Image (cartoon, rainbow over all chains, first blue to last red; front, side, top):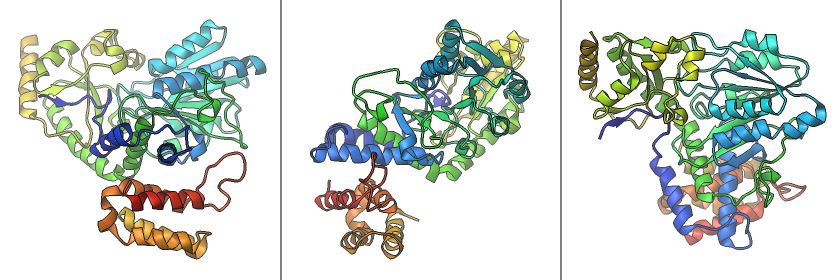
Length: 380
Length: 84
């Protein structure tokens, strides 16, 4: 089997996390909404324990954690859930960046079709959205600013600290898509200025199908969201549906480990990165995104003259990698992120994303180097 | 520091400086000091630790329950004893 180097798409599940999924599927399968017997009580205790653990990573209170099916749902809820409030207050101006995930861009496009005014801020060649541009388009009636934490294609950390300064004292709600950086970069998401945070479980070694929306209370009130689903009143009336206790418990365990094991995991990722950079230094490659802002576990490169799919196929027996966001790679559309960073079509079409984690085994780098050198020779 | 040591420290702190009563502190300390008996159920020990950390006599007061009271702690201790 090739070594899996696509951890930005999804991570493997930690063994202790998988053990909890089994436990709450087979043995302790109660419904958290039926705390009238031990089955239900235990399920409820597990959910509240997980809520606490998930919130702790970003210094949120447990009552500020709303469980969802994943970051896509959380982003949709944060953006589309504001429609009623926007109509009521007549504030219909929304700002987001050109390098957001489709789970943000598409709901914002939907708002635009409904008559909202939308500004999309530029990104620079380093892979970061432009805060100066954000400052230019920010208006007194801006309803929402939606920015990402870490870009999923490049691994580049975004300037949230600068956005925090800009938005201090402004009424706009601030939503951050933290799917890619939650549990990996621990500082920026603690900002109390961020009103809403979208989180994903399967990017931090929990299973797919679980995430959360953190809604930070201001003066005791949640951001003015309306639910998108009805039928049960779970999650403080904001997200109806029976809670998937096994997935929630797993997400909690993964969040706990993300905090507890952060330094050790980061050290392993940095050591792995050194090997990747050593290999790349022997090749004709261009890095997409500034190295100084890129998190230790991923890198995006372009191999001039070699199409992404050609390289992926050539390497498929040694390493499993991707060319763009997992959510858009199946559509074969060129990366909107790299294009927004000013990369040429040729650079975009030759881009590769390698992403790893503390569980990634050793790679036969000599084999990788030989394959890539051969591809270069074929090209010339 | 492992979860048992943290539990012992937290129980002592909540007993000495918080509202945790002796009838809960004693069995919780027994768990903390018996890792050989409970190491296979670390999940529940972690849960107990969180409940002791956030113990609040008035957890059930008000509209929402965002802390843990004596019933929560006692229930988790029972689950540990039963080997749940």
